[in-house]
Image (tube, rainbow, N blue to C red; front, side, top):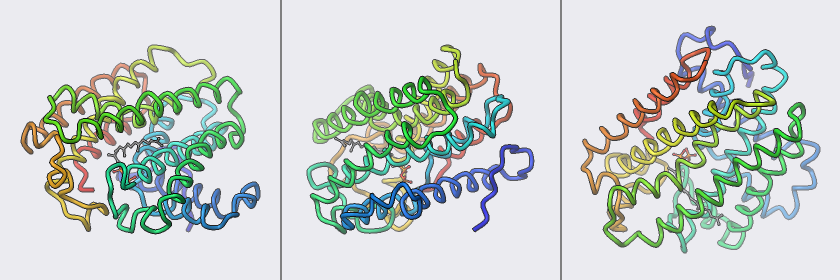
Length: 317
Ligand code: GRG
């Protein structure tokens, strides 16, 4: 497939086509990395491990976080766009690897216990629990290896900042968020507590997808720009989780590619359970309005992030 590497979004009449092209770039890069890249031939053995990794990475995720990363990069005014784009693509792939491994671990029987992911048996169903855990471990560390080893033009200091942002999101975001989600799963919890869990387990990585491209695009990035992106990313991330909860109630297993109605079955506290469906959607919309308010503070050269924020809350899967 011929994939356009397009920096100028003005050549697109429909933003969705642009976003889809960015998704294809990420899919293509990940496929090459895990199947063709000469540096990765040593990662073919044992076959069961790398087959489990390929199964879980190259399996049709929406690539929301990776596309957000590329869209943010393409929104910044940067004279060296072409020089740094490949490094941003590598970073987007690292973010998708971290996300995909979190889904493997989330599906495990000791966690959320789901048999279906992205429309197929979850990793532990297809490969067994031990291989699924180890595939997740390999993917998490591979993500950091890619940033340190496969980026070509960014400085060592930029690499360290990227690793810092992503590791922070993982150990101070995803993991505590997941622990709280498990510990609180059978309790009736307050809106503040649900928001806190969403902020940690979902918004932390989405926030990183806005911060990392800023680091890639400039050797020295203004701290205020990072703070603004952090705040916008957090709001978009919580809104994303609210819609995830809403879709669990309103959509079906085929459309979602994962088991629908599961939160209710598990008696989990969710946004719709606490607020009802309409108020949950309203809250997601309000967060997107606030996120866009934050983004107006930045000298962005196009409206990509604004459009993407809208698309993320109107999604159907
Ligand atoms: C590795 C020790 C260790 C822990 C991992 C499991 C975990 C910690 C964190 C899980 C966090 C989690 C699963 C959050 C849910 C976020 C969410 C809404 C996922 C669905 O994302 P989509 O819709 O999925 O972008 P696709 O399949 O399209 O990529």
